[in-house]
Image 1 (cartoon, rainbow, N blue to C red):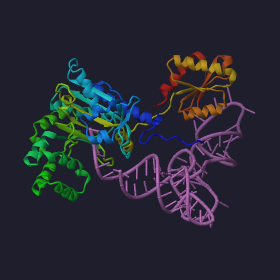
Image 2: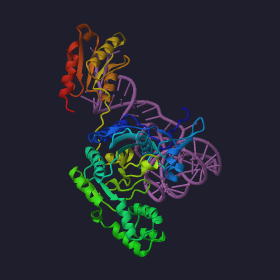
Image 3: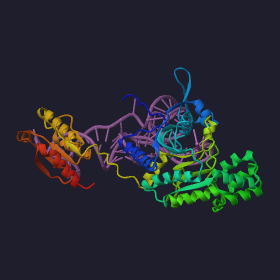
Image 4: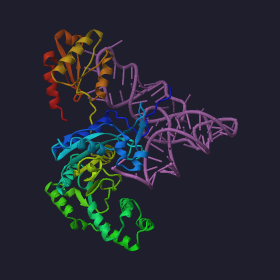
Length: 427
RNA sequence: GAGCCUGUAGCUCAACGGCAGAGCGCUACACUGUGGCUGUAGAUGUUGAGGGUUCGAAACCCUUCAGGCUCCCCA
């Protein structure tokens, strides 16, 4: 055999089983968003690099994007995230859209990173955003949509939680500790990393960054204070709204959640699986009130989150929460007895499809044994045989593969029989 | 960008310097008008790729590709 051409590193191939999982996540995500009245939308998969260069970090644009020159020499990028496209599209129609805008999307994204557990270079992401409202109640709605998804796939509050913090609250705490503005990005990143490090190591790490012993003590007090939310009016309102929305049991305040500083201006949140076997967030998001103005639109408050399909799929798999994806393409298979009866079998299959049934027809006259084995592999529940005997009497043999019973049925009653058998068989 | 580990039959893995194997799956037959279960027989292959050491390499060394786990990063 010639040398195999390999897949591009970090891409994934979706055989029918994987496709079923992807569609399952897509279906549950869409259902959660639609139940809140959100509309599905999408942007281009390819964008100019300028879209991201404007507001995304150097790291992203230069090292983690799939960027290449098209045939005219222009630099184009496979989209690494959706929010800049959203901001542009909203800005373009800002005068004619009815706010608040509530949109969701599910599609492919690309990032040039080292593939590892929970991370590939090509992945699917569910994005949900609300634009035009600046209220903690809007934040609560977004969290509730995420929780609705988690609930619908069987992630109970014991298995997964949403951890919430607020950037403005943290800023005022940093003020109180006299942590200078220019050090806040670094400090925030260190807070983000804290859960992954040994406590003693983290202390020296922070001190090395020029934070005083007193500030460190204060910082640790803040990060260990899980009642801190009571000082934030926004968070108090958020939790009240979460309770009203019936999702409070999933949500916990955690001052260690930072999510970087790129867009986020207020509430930030991340969902994690509680046992921590997958250390990556299931979903994450927050409020980004400055983004529209940053891309040239009128100022517009916004809140949103994104969820990746890779981490979600791993967690559902590890927790045994995935339903059994029956890859059966059709419950009925029509065999082909021999060359002379091939046309009759095809015609029978067509009749049944017109009657609304999903029907596989074997495409060539091979041994019936082989066709039955194929039916079994395809998890068909009924096999129809139209041989010389049946053809002579205008009948069809209908075999129930689940209990092994076979009956002769008049051809024009076959569809009815099939429906009866399918209705009688559990699942 | 850095470190460590792993690539052997379609799949899961064994052989660890001396004839490349097992289980599952696959194919055929028993059963030429009927699947699952059973029995019998059969085929698995450039040991990821390329180079080197050696009388001899799947094994040891180098390079490369891919995957995994970390660091980094996480829009």
